[in-house]
Image (cartoon, rainbow, N blue to C red):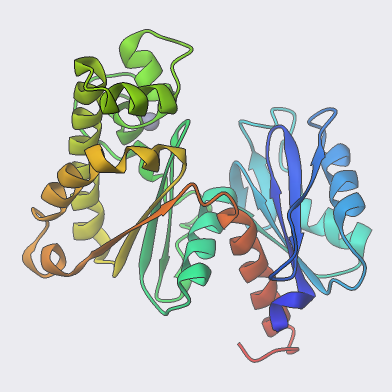
Length: 290
Ligand SMILES: [Zn+2]
């Protein structure tokens, strides 16, 4: 299978993860610091021989092949990451924003030519879209910041705005709302399962905000599929009815048609998307049919 020739890397704040081929395990290296050279050395260490192209998912703001800035890597400014990896490794390298890579991964995993929007619910809310077979990147590669769609209210968000979706249905949002800095998603789900009112309220409000955001997404880009992934999808029983209700308020053709897919934690999505980007690069080089 062609994917055997490519590897995908997910660069995170605490470590670098790599998978080569479609069956291989995910290998991981912890980072001793967050400098570019450390990350490049980690990728080099993890890369097995014989890989013909590499895709890399990076958190932060990209402009083409350059990482302009990254909240996880504060010292990075205008880092030409793809070119530096290409020079070091001697193979073609594609880079993607990690949320965009996750959307590409979900698209590849579905194995269909669908228009797809992904929302990842975790510490924050990530998002990405693949429309007409292409990842939505925007002018500067920053498109798809779906966690910061306005979903109502005045609650401050980490991005500096207020009322973002992320303030309603993410661990960081719930911590701010409850004033409990140590609150995690599992505690909220367990409390809701035990019938505790505060958790049921949090999830009902989160679900309603998710429904409002889904309606906006549907009206904006009319996708075939809305995929939900990430740790907080464990709250599906409480979120889903509100999401369905919100989506039913989209304009008529979309409301009846859009399929919602719950993928669970789906940890490897960004790596799979990075591999898909690397495969595309090989195809562009003329090695493979597109
Ligand atoms: Zn925000």
